[in-house]
Amino acid sequence: MRRFVHFLLAGLLLAALAAGCTAPPAAEAPAAPTEAAVEAPAAPEAGVAMAAAPEAENAIAPCATTHEGETIVVYQQAGLTGPLSTILGNSFINGTNDAVEEINGAGGVCGAELSIRLVDTQYDPEQELAAYESFRAEDPKPLFVLTYGSGATIVLKDRVNEDKIPNLAAGLNAEAFYIPRNGYTVGVAPIYSDQFAGFVKWAAENWAEIKPEGAGDEIVVGVVGWANAFGAGATTPEALAYAESLGVTVLPLEQQEISPSADVTGQLQNLLVNGANVIYIQSLSFGPAQVIGTLRALGAWDSVVVGGVNWAMNQDVLNILGENATLAEGMYGVVPSYWWTDTEVAGVQKALAAFEAGGYPETEKAVGYLLSYGSLFAIRDILQHAINTSGYENLSGESFMAAMQDLGLVSAGGLYALDVRGENRAPAVATIRRVATVDGKLTYVTVQDFFELPDTRPPAP
Image 1 (cartoon, rainbow, N blue to C red):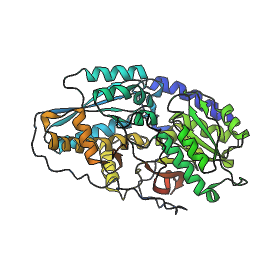
Image 2: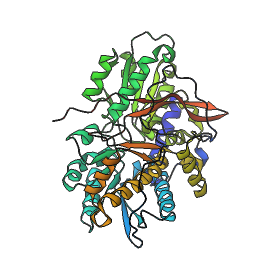
Image 3: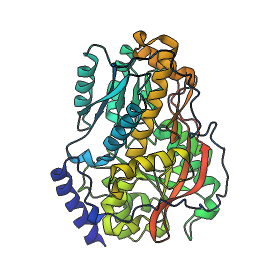
Image 4: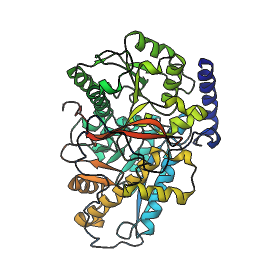
């Protein structure tokens, strides 16, 4: 098995450098999650239902004015080339394009059409800043920007606050969202420390049912995270204090090199030797694949509960594992949105219809598509509300933010919700799902319905 792991990772490095933003080849992909609704096993704790179901329609008044011939630009910056381009692959681009086409086909935003401006940053903070600066120099300035990495979230935090241009961010860094309060960085999912604290809470409440054979009553969590701000995003002082309040021990963070050829054997052995019976993965794409493969190679998979951040619970991890995707079976993850298998949900039905109309391979049924597809419908509704309340001629980042806050909890195409109520800058609800084989196919089965995550935002300065 160890030989398989090193062979896999060496191959991944070559594939990542050669492929650019091309998704992993379909021939190596595992069976895609079934589109039939999966009946989840009963959760030991039902949790707290979401305050407002994501599938609920936003209460937006009809357009008071129309603006045919006008264009509103959707500014996006993400890594399209380089070794990290496989993180989002083509799925988020497809989701954006499909949503914009659908919105424009239905009359746009009060007659104005949406147009996409996408710039490659390779997820490098300097390039993220340069892309933003080129955007803000345009006339008119952006009403909002969409970013996808923690590096962008952090480096743009002060700039977007100064410029009053909302950054709808998928890099979920707690300090960037909440220091200072009432900033212009808004998360499309819960901050990483809330996710980690929520996973620890769920594990503690359900330890008797999920603990490995031979494990005692004490929970010892070992976190493996990328060697960057994202990788350190789970184990903030506030999240660690919350875990301690539950009697849960969290070992010092083990950092993982950000490379498709990284070896995490030493890091995992350190955690296991120090008593870890839970391994939490704070990485994505090839990162979780490395942890999964190495735990299997060490023969430690059945002696620990394995969980991960929302990006770790994604189709691309199974794609990378390829024909060995079943190695991930039994892994838990924090999932803050509906998933492709939730076919009873109207928002999922819409996303499925658009995906199928696009003719994309099953390997691209990933979180990136749902994230970007949903976000554009939230943006449509916020823009319409801003036009109605402030006037088209007064559209700006500030009026966009005001309209978003007036709505408070904003449905993103019925797939998830933005939460800017009061000082909130990110949603604080999620599900827990488990990789399992259903009807002969790997899928993500819900073991805990939407519940409130602990609040681990950093204190105000």
